[in-house]
Structure formats: C-alpha cells, structure tokens
Image (cartoon, rainbow, N blue to C red):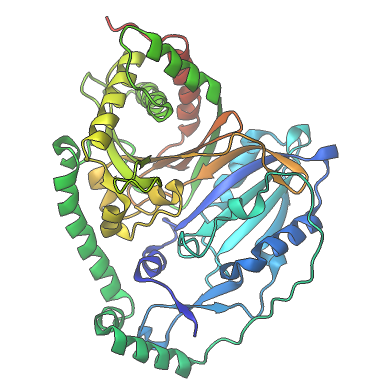
Length: 472
C-alpha cells in the first residue's frame, strides 16, 4: 500500500504558490583535486546514495476527488539526469555571479510530476572551484524517513565509491480505483480525517488555520509577555514577489570564540554563547542597514527574530530537544557589547525560564516539524508569522572536520531558507570546519540592498572582536 502524506506535509503542498515556495536548499562550494569536475561520477554517487532512500525516487500522486491526502508512489519514469543538472558560470566565475545564479534557480517551484528535489552542479568558479546547489521540498524531508540532500552527498573521508549494481525497480502505482478504495478504508479508521480532506484541500487549510490560532493561544501563555505582542513594524515585512536576491557571507568561527573567551574573563562576565554573538552580529548589521536606508532608529528600536535553538531535554535522556525563542534584537542600542549582553540575557531568560517554545508546540502553528533547525525555522512559513516576528534566523552547528563529495573537499556551505508570506528576508547559517557561513535569502524588490546587510554582518562581528563599544 502506498504511503500517504501526513496532513502536515500535505499542507506544504496546499500552501505553496509561485511567490512562497516550500523547499529548502543549500549552496556547497568545493575544491576539486586538479580542478576537474566529473559530472558522470556525481550522477553515480547520487544513484548509490539514494538507493536506500526511496523517497528520492517517488513522486506525489493525488487521490481522485481529493478524498484523502496524496500518496507517495514510485516514479516509473524516474530519470536521475533530470534531477542532477549541469551549469557553468561565465568568466571570471566570482562568488557574486554564483549568488545571482542561486537567486534565479532557488525560487522556481519543483516539478510536482516528479520526485521533489533537484541538484545543480555549477562549474567555472574562480580558483578552480565548483558548487553543488540543492533544492528539497519540505513534504519530502519529513525528518523521519528522509535526509536532506546535503547529508546524502557528504562523507567524512575522500574517495569515490565503487559502482554497484542498481537493483531498484519501480513498483507499479495503484489505479485510481485503488486510491479511492484505500481512501475509503482510511476513512473508516479515521472518519475525521476523511471529513477534513473531502473538500479538495480547502478544509485542510481551514483546519490548519485553526491549529495556528490555537497555537497562538498557547504561544501567548508560553513566551514572555513582550514577545506575545505583535511584531514591531519593519521594512523586513513587505509584499513578497517571485524574484529573489541571495548573498553569502563567510566568517571565522575563531572570532566568535575569541569574543566569548574575552567576555568570560572580563569584569562583567556573562554566560555568552556563540549563538548570542551571532545574533548580536546580526543586530548590529540590521542597525547599520536601517541607517543606510534613512530609516528612523531610536533607542527602543527592535527587530523581532524567531530563533530555533537546541535545549536540554527535561526528561534527562541525554538527547537535546528543539525549541524556538522570539528575541527582540536591540538594533536601537549603539554599543555593540551592550547589544550582545542584552541578547544573551533575553536568550537565557527564555530558555532557563521555560519561555522558549518547544518544537511540538510549534507544530500547532503552521504544520511545524523539526528535521533540522533550518527546516524548523523555514516551516513556520504562514501568513500569521509576520504578526509574531520580523524574520527567521536559523543556526545549525556543523562538523568541525572536513567533508567530501567524492574526492572533492567541501570548502563552505550556505543555507537557503525560503521566505514566508509578508517577510522579505530569511537568514540561515551553518558552522563548518572552522567557519560560520551565512545565507541571506531576500525578496528582490523589497531588499535591493541586501548585500549591504551582508557586509554589515562581517563588520558587526569585527566590531565585537575588536572589543566593541564601551558601556558609557
């Protein structure tokens, strides 16, 4: 029997439109030995890696009459070469050209008639590098049965795997009658689910809105009272079109650790985390960006960010759980160190005081699920999100040892977080092998100056690393 999409995953298909796609991505830059890229070997590598991940060879099929959620069926015409595409940048192949390429391809919806993923091999980067760009739909990466393509490709040792015999053969999909029969059987097991689907997804959306509203009530009783108020007005909340801008920012992880160690030895020692320093760098960058725009910035100006974090499991089982904090970034504060201490205090207050919102609680807001912290942040893409926060900031700690695709070493990796309706910016960042890499995904018309914000992040971190401003 074909696997049926959960209501949560199906909702991502129903909510998706041309301006707010529901897939996450990554931009991975590699250094190939000898400056050579082998497209055929990449195809072989992917074929071997997805052999044990059937979702990457399955497509979504709707049930006639929308009597139930869609199902996953094998793609009988699966064509790996369709999903793995080859492109090249014109000389000189700069990072700015790569950013433009990402901005063009990432907002394009995935083909619903095929498995919901794509990989782009981009050749021609300067210094002999190449890039791999991934796109994976939220409905595919459910956090239980599937891994993101970035995880699928990577290995901690260099070398191409020996080709193996591909024994996969697609199973014939069910007939329309079979899909209807299966839906009726499921309706007997769960009549309420049948009632929710019979109107072609419309009722699904109404149910989803109801969960969001009930989630908001829970949120108001869980987070700090200040965070429960509507998000402040911001140019970050604007109409979102189809076109995007994308900016990559690479920083040194040692700079964040140096700031943390210096503060731990100082007279005003606080328990400041690397994530606090990240947020302080973003707050300083937002302040500089607003000032360059001529926006009014005063002492009380804040930008509210949704920040998914990993916190200790209260059951004591040793595994971390995911939670999200609503943090008012103090962009009106002119002193960099004061911004950092304020953010550190707010984060400690929410996490230690039980005010952070657990991932299970967030599931009531917009079909929220946490396969990774990046997906956790991106899955809050709903119309109501702009009432709660101005932007999403997802920070995923990665391995501090090199990773490889074949014999090519991964140099840097930049997340691409989709935009929610009414939100012109999403920031994802990943730490990897001594670096911290930001991906800024922005609406092209609302934020034509997003590269100013990108540069300001590096400048804001440098200000903190140099000692910041005095407390006056």
